[in-house]
Image (cartoon, rainbow, N blue to C red; front, top):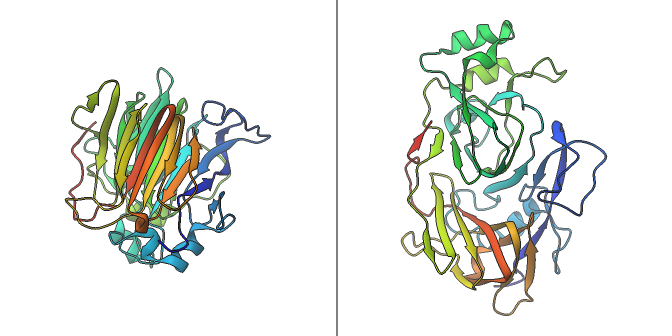
Length: 332
């Protein structure tokens, strides 16, 4: 195990013009004087909050510990593979697109940005835009951007708490107000802004339009019913080429391993509490307490670990698949 242990991450709050000062649904004890759009949990510059490695960034730890931290499954042995964050849209985000791996490599980036959104909360009428309406071309989108009518060509859908949305690279998308989202994505911040409602921010039309795909596999993930026993349940929210995200809600201890039996490759595990409180326990390390809004990074080399609820906890667990997975089955 070396010097690694369960790493409680310090949230990094990112101001955005479309955000909100009220993050109390997730962070009731934090107060803000500016609009916060995102709470980054496992970005490259996110820092550890507990133990001997407190203050160290994930980027530095990935370079220092390599596969001891991130496991066998991620492609790059010295970079933390997944970025998880909370999103707090209080106004519409810009209409944007992220490149897929192929489009990213074409402009010198190592990889693209495919992501997924778990809807923690959603007010009635909350919507997202996901992809272009059927039959719309990139040329039509470019013209609509010039005419300030790009929103009319997007596929707007209602979203509800508990849904998982898959956003493949190349998908034109945006979030409307009223929801709280946990985003899991490839560790990349490559975003091309196509349209921003007249806000004075830079657009990236040449790169963005080149990255747009007219047909995508994005949508609401179709998933099997959760496994439930005595009020405790486990659900696989998404299995995709770059990430697997599961959800647990329990008042009983749960045992886990950083190596998935069917994959036979280890992966760092990321736990994000969306309700309640719990304790992460591993052999030969102090317990790590995490509660709503917190993330804990479980280094791959730790092997077995346990989550013990403090009364009850609901959390997501994200990891990198150890084998090639297809894109998930989705619907609009």
